[in-house]
Each structure stands twice: as structure tokens, then as C-alpha cells.
Amino acid sequence: MKTGIIGLPQVGKTSLFQILTKAHLSAQANPREAHIGVAKVPDDRLDRLAALYNPKKLTHTSVEYVDVGAIGQDALKETAYIGHLRQVDALAHVIRVFEDPAIPHVGEIDPLRDIKNVEFDLMVSDLGQIEKRLERLEKDLKKMKTPDLEKEFELLKRANAHLGSEKPLREMQMTPEDKKRLRGFMFLSEKPILYVLNIGESSELGKQLEEAVGKYKLTDIAARPNAGATAICGKVEAELSEMSDADAAEFLSSYELKESGLVRLIRTTYQLLGLISFFTAGEDECRAWQIPAHTRAQEAAGAIHSDLEKHFIRAETIRWDQLLEAGSEANARAKGTLRLEGKDYIVQDGDVMHIRHSG
Ligand SMILES: Nc1nc2c(ncn2[C@@H]2O[C@H](COP(=O)(O)OP(=O)(O)O)[C@@H](O)[C@H]2O)c(=O)[nH]1
Ligand SMILES: [Mg+2]
Image 1 (tube, rainbow, N blue to C red):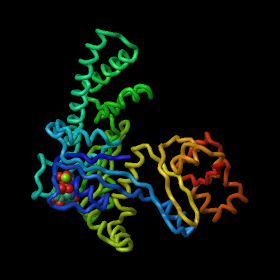
Image 2 (cartoon, rainbow, N blue to C red):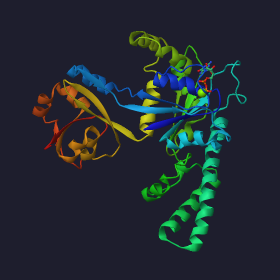
Image 3 (cartoon, rainbow, N blue to C red):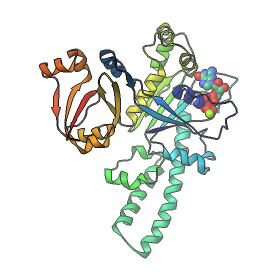
Image 4 (cartoon, helix red, strand yellow):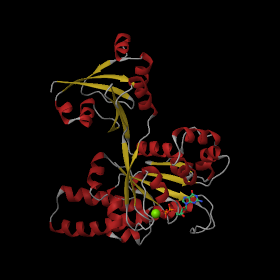
């Protein structure tokens, strides 16, 4: 799963990308070139399971980030730029809040204005694509009417009107069938979006981060379908990423922060992508596995190995905290908190599973 980092020029996109993925980019790197990197998804539940099993190996899940470069009408006309952006599953829109006279910005700090402008660019790009396709469809429908083409025409007409009323496609009511029909277009305004306020340093950073979404009037926008908002302080995160774990913990508490903004950002992206994690735990390895929410146990087993899906019998299942409470699988079995689930069981976020198979 990939998340595209978008935003206006000089708002901190590349800085954020570097901290997220721990990438070391050379200063000369072409600013128009996309950077692609992987971020480990922090998970305290997995860390606590590992403390119980003391495994040889500990494996977190990961999400990919793509830093595509500054957005704008011109960039969106470039094949390479839009190609990268279409491929992603979600967008993280970095918005400048930090004050720094040395770094130019489009005007006063105004997150809502910046959000509106970027959203507009995304919608204009989608509209262009829809209009082209509608013209083509109109011609084709004159030659021959098929139910498929007619349905596509109706749906695109509706999408067109929706965008015309200045609403992004991620807010349009769609059936799963509609969604499937539109999938090939990879519309930009249809992608789930996370607004990331990049705020300045302050001695009360914990409070500032907590209040930022409300202070900059993003509460309503963040509550819309397929949207979310969070705040980070890029400067502080950059310093944190250079520290040892112990130093970082002390640094965080000196700012009255429970966790780094980065951890929250990655977790929020994960949620926005509709992903959950289940775990496998043992002395060899404790590991988190990434699956879409509402996945059946048999398909979830396939995330580990296709043979497990094919020869699936049952899944021994327990919630991570119940396993920790019991102290061992044997205790959990004795207590009755370890369940045997069948192939249609819907896996829950935080389940620890052991797949029984006949392979
Ligand atoms: N003061 C301050 N400067 C920042 C922050 N984040 C990025 N910058 C600076 O802003 C400039 C642009 O950052 P960059 O990450 O390249 O932005 P991009 O154009 O959005 O990729 C650089 O000089 C950064 O050092 C921040 O949180 N605070
Ligand atoms: Mg950049």
C-alpha cells in the first residue's frame, strides 16, 4: 500500500518523507523526481508480545510513501508526475503552518486556503479525464449501445456533476460496483486523504499538536468521508529521528508528548488505508501481518502464505491483550480465551492467530 505525499512547494514534504522512511537523499537529487521509501508501522502491541516470547526475529508491517514533488496545474499535466500520483492508494497532504521568513510561501499561513487550492487541482485533473472519456463514450454509444457502456456513461455523468458542485470524488456515494467501474481511472480526488499540519517549534509542543486541527479549523474537513487530519512538527521529528530510543523518550517527555507525531501519522495513514494487523507469535518470530479490515480468516492466512490459505482448517485465535494477560497459549487454552475460528471468521485488529492447516 502506497501513500503519496503532496502539497504546495516548500511546506516540508521531502523533509517529512526523509524522516518517515529514514532515507538519506543527496542534496542534488532532482526535485522533480519522485522519491519512494518504506516506513515501518510502529505497533506497541507487537512489541509487548515480543517481550513475552523473546523471539529471534521481530517483524513489523510497513507502508510505502512516495514524495512526488510540489503539486500544481502544471505538475499535474506532466505524465511522470501524474503517473506516480495515480498509483498511490491514499494521499498525505502536507500543509505549512510553521513560520519562517527565510522560506517563501504563497502568502500568509492559511491551511484552509491551501487545502482548497490543492483540492481544486486534484478535481480539475479528474474533470479533464472524465470529460475526455465522456466524449469518447458519446461517440461509441451512437454506434452501439451496450449495458456496460451505458452504465459507465451514467456514472461518469454523475461524477462530473459531483465535481461540478466542487466536491471531491471521495465524498461521492458509490456502490461497490460503481467503485469497481471507476477503479481504472485512478481518480486523484477519490483517494482517501490525510491533512498533515506541519507546525512550528514551541515549548508547549504537546499542547500545540493536540490543538492544531481545531485551531486551524480543520475539524469539519477531517470529519468528511475518507479524510483525516493530524499535526506534526517536522523540525522536532527530524531531531528525534537522529536520537537513540532512550534520548528520544526523554526528549518527548520534556515536551509533554506521549509519542512522536510521526508514530501517530503512520498509524493514521494505516487506518485511512483501511488496514488492520493481526499477529503471529512464537519463539522464532513475532510478526504483524497487514490485511484489509473485514478480511475472512482463510484469506488472512493467505497473507502469511498461499499454502496456508489453500489448506486452511481452523485458526487458533486470541486477542493480543488476552494472551498477554494469560501469560502463555497453554494458560489461555485452559482459561478458554483461546478460540478455534473457522474460515469465515472476520479477523479483528489485534488478533493473534495460529493457522491449522492440512498442507
Ligand atoms: N522552520 C521550519 N522549516 C522547515 C520545516 N520543515 C521543512 N522546513 C524547511 O523548509 C524548506 C523546504 O523543505 P522541504 O522538505 O524540501 O519542502 P518540500 O518542498 O515540500 O519538499 C527546507 O529549507 C526545510 O529545511 C519545519 O517544520 N520548520
Ligand atoms: Mg520536496
